[in-house]
Structure formats: structure tokens, C-alpha cells
Image (cartoon, rainbow, N blue to C red; front, top):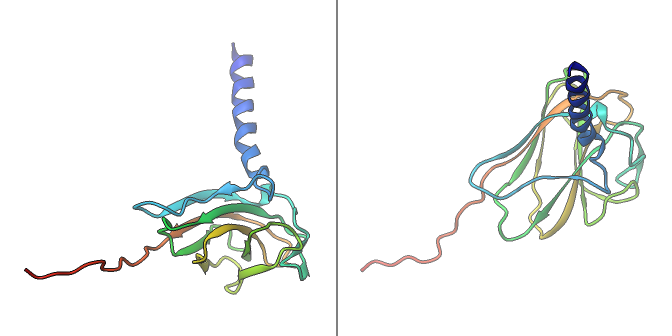
Length: 166
């Protein structure tokens, strides 16, 4: 009985760890951008990822681990910003946004990597309809990785459609 419980626990642990490895261009995690509340993905271990892209934004080499997310922009989008928060003080995170395709040679439409080690990074959610990929990695050459949370937050303003006084 103890052996079966141990095997079950080991299997569940393996399944939980496998999710981080599966976040690639071929099978990204989905970021929901619709709804009444902010959408947060907590406790992602960037160290469990792999260097999948090699060349980032079609222009510079990066030997760092990558975690890939995807999202679709359409008329129902409510999120306006992405905020990456890290709990790893020595890690210098970066967010890369690619439109339409995901891969080492794909051009980035936005990059957030300005705030240094242990700091949050923020990026605007794009407004054009279509499929996008958000890659979380380390600033090139830093040789580190860390744990992070990703928040698709903010609210779109509501436009007045009709007004009348009777």
C-alpha cells in the first residue's frame, strides 16, 4: 500500500513538472484575456523550461531557457497590460512578443527587458486582432533563470453608445 501511494505521488509530481516543459512554440500555455477580473498565472518555474528558440527576435542569440504562452486578440479582449513579477532577486527577466508565428527567426513586435535583476517587467497587450506568442526568458547573456507570475490585467475603457434625455 505504501508503495502504491509513493508511486501515485511520484506520478502526480511528474505530471505537474511536465507542464513547464510543454510550454513551447508547438504547445504553448494559453493566456485568457477576457473576463471581469485580472488573469494571473502564478509560480511558473522558468528554470524548468528549455532553450527552444536560440535566436530571439530574429536578431540576437540567447542560450537562456524560454517559456512560451499564446493568446488570441479579438473583439472580446479586456486585458490591456502584461506584468511579469519575479520572486528571484538575481534573475533578469525578459518578455518578447511575436505576432502570427513563433520561432527563433520570428520578428518581435515588442520587448520588455529594461528593469534589471529582480524587477518586474510590463508590456502593453497588442490591439490588433490575431494570434500572438509571449515568450518569457532571461535577458541575453545573464545565464540565470527564475520563478515568475504573469498577470494579464487592466481594463478596456467603455465607450458610450447612446445618450438621450427625455
